Each structure stands twice: as C-alpha cells, then as structure tokens.
Length: 224
Ligand code: SAH
Image 1: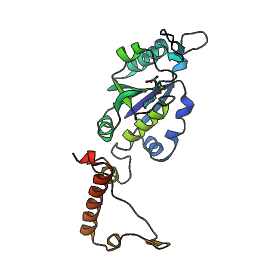
Image 2 (image 1 turned 45 degrees about the vertical axis):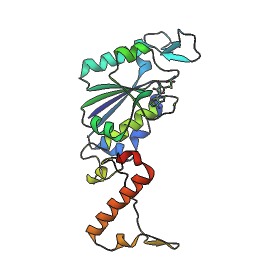
Image 3 (image 1 turned 120 degrees about the vertical axis):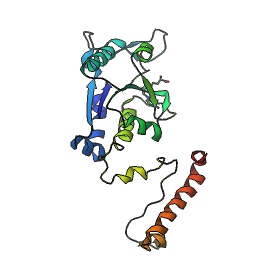
Image 4 (image 1 turned 90 degrees about the vertical axis):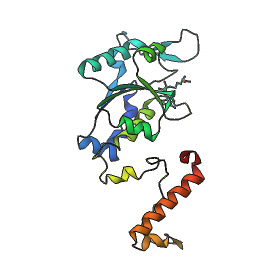
C-alpha cells in the first residue's frame, strides 16, 4: 500500500511514522508513506497557499491552485483508489472504515488548515471526507496520522502476531477484554485466578464474557 499525505505543515507528520508499528511497517516494505509540502506547488511568487475568504469571514482559506497542481501531478504518476480530505464534517472514522481502506493500493490524504479549504477542491478533487471525531482540530495532520495508523496496523504482516489485530476492540463489534501481565500479584492487587489456571478453553470463555460485559456496560450501542 502507498499513502500520500498532502500538507502545508510537513513537520507535524515527521514523528508519527518514525516509531513503533508504523515505522516497522515502512521498514518491512508493507507500506510506503510520502509526505508532500503543498507550498512547493504554489505558483504564487511568495509561495502562498492561502487567501482571504470571499465571504469576509475571519481566517484564511487554502487556495485551489497548489493543491490541484499536486493532486494532478500525483494522479499522473499512478492511479489512486481514493482521495481523502480530513474534515470535521466528514464520515466518522471507525474500525469498519479502517478495514475497508486497508485493502486499497494507493490512497491520498489531504490535510486542511486554517479556516479550511476552498469548497471547489472538495467538490471537484476529493472522493471522500473523513472526520476523526466531533471536535475541531487546528489542522488535518493529526487526523491523517490517526487515519494512517488505523489502516496500516491492519495490513497483513504488519503486526507480528497477526491475530492481535483481530482481537482488538470493534473488530467483531465487541470491546477487547482486559489484559494482565506479570507479576500475578502487586501490592495485594491480583490477576484473576482463571488466567493462571492454564485452562485454555476456560480462559477463552472468560475473555468472551468479559468482552460482552464490557461492551454492554460501556458501549451498548455496539450490540444492537
Ligand atoms: N472551519 C472548519 C474547521 C477548520 S479546522 C469547520 O468548522 O468545519 C482546520 C482543518 O483541520 C480542517 O480543514 C481539517 O482538515 C482539519 N480538521 C479539523 N478537525 C478535524 C476532525 N475532527 N477530523 C478531521 N480533520 C479535522
């Protein structure tokens, strides 16, 4: 899979891909992440990428030319399955959406900034708009990192224990059961006996019960 991220603040995306699972996925060659600075494609003599809103609202709006030039250049190089714009009014990211995006070959993610982007970009250049939640961020960069992380960990071979993505919360509309590690007892706080019993079948049943109980208590909407 290849992910191209389009931003005016590439520095904001330096760290997320340099650590942990995303770093390993890139090193293993399972995903290719390219960060593009929209500013490099501005034909303005000061390399401007934003301008005042026609409606007179406070705040700057990202202009269409540099974004169009960059998207056109990338589209000339390869086919993209989808071009995503990160937006608070987009489709809410969930595990189901992450699963379906993880099967794609090439995706582009456009990060907005300031007051947002010229509506014509959304109308004519974008295929899909994704929100990471009902709150407003200063820019789409953190959202692009969240979207990428949720997708990349699902690519086969990325997680060393392949089943571990399957047992995560939401994969089967259930929250994950609690997990424990050593020591079995700490300051009087004990790990449930069943986990020390060695009885695999009983442990599996316990995990399912815990998942169901947690989901009922915390996210009853998932059980519907
Ligand atoms: N004025 C816009 C918000 C602009 S915030 C509005 O009210 O809808 C600046 C940029 O941050 C947006 O263009 C978008 O790319 C990104 N962003 C903000 N909140 C986001 C969210 N919840 N999910 C995804 N991207 C978001």
